Length: 222
Image (cartoon, rainbow, N blue to C red; front, side):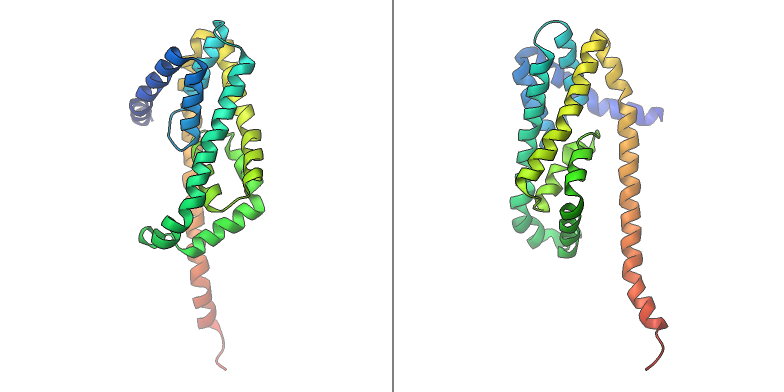
């Protein structure tokens, strides 16, 4: 566990320093840029951005309301960018060349059906989860989820996440870095759940492919 923590720290610490420097130099404009990038599949930790910005609220640099508004709108704009990449890149990249990396049209059809049935809940709840929230807009675009529904549920999920981090940063003040480090364990849990989910989907898919063959072999001769 210690080794994993040190590895993660070696990756995230430079990003955290970059985020705090940007906010220190640009204020709310820096928050906007960082949260936009984080939501456009660039792994800049929103925990560090919003906790540090919340600390700045406690120092009187700007208000909590303005911080939450800027962070949420930036997240939404970044999500639009990732959504557009998935939406317009589907035909040119995935449908034409996806087979080179194991992505078939049947996989895209499954994604389409999933977002048609569960897209609203998927977008909303994943926006409340670290790690996953950074990338969910891309598959939503690939699955051609209706844009205004995507926008509504993205914003609905962004606001509580941004508010929670900003509020915690404001309340803990100079101890924001300690909270940032503690949230790494939530990241571990989310990544573990995602890995388990992917493994279960792969196993289920393989079993589904074998069943027709087995059923044909068990069928009595005509």
